[in-house]
Length: 226
Length: 129
Image (cartoon, rainbow over all chains, first blue to last red; front, side, top):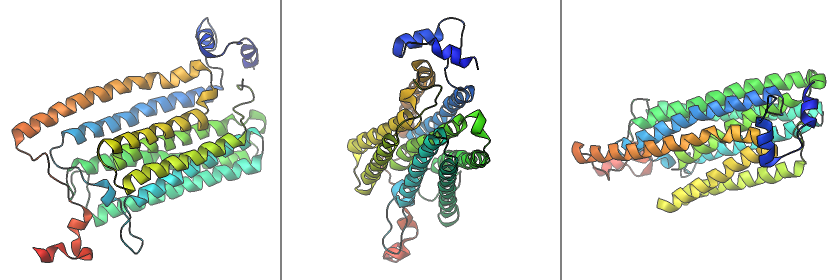
């Protein structure tokens, strides 16, 4: 590919490299095109999620009714007293574990260790699926047991329901899509589809997965903790 | 440095960051578990959040090893969102201020908890009335 020739002609890093990459009529990003496109998609997704979270900020600031206490609503009892927010904490740990297995899958991919790459991606997808399962449980609990609806709930500010369903729903959709995407990549890895093409695709899928984890970091902080 | 061989780094750094992310998540949860409130809660939650987000983007998503041209493309545009957040905060505070002043709501009202609503497991709120 012509990329090798371009790569040789970029001695600088840091700020002079930045100027160099953007100057003149040539390729700007020295990464596979799929990776550049994934990053640009993720930037646009950042805008969508930030708009949701900013909408939540505005609604929460302006509502005149008290905001429901998340800590108690998302508490779960294992026989004894309810433990505050425990379900969400478990979901957070599951997503972080899956981020770690994904990072290992990317690393094994570049080592061309097909078997380990396959199993690390499958493990990531399985953890993602269990996350979606717990989210389904959480939604069921809130809708059926507590009577939370997008237009109202028995605890306080009616906006709680719409914000909850919109933000966690959109995030859950991302996780579900990620699970399907990862399984697709995993089976292609297993079949040796990337032996000639290179294993960048595992890193690109990894970027998407880490982004989903990243969004959860913000949802966990702003929606559940604050 | 790594564009052709892809992002290949020693495994040790991933294990370290992984452990750190677990630790920071545990810290975030501890803030809620030990019911830290007020300014301290905001500071701690936002600090742990920023650290977690930073480590995920820089190490797991390999941003520290990318060339500056790509890093600025990723991190630059979202910075305008800070402006949106600032504007919506100012606007939101103004709206809630006018609503409390003119619509007669109680700014100190407290939300109901699940225990208030299904109180029978915990001594029965209904009987006490």
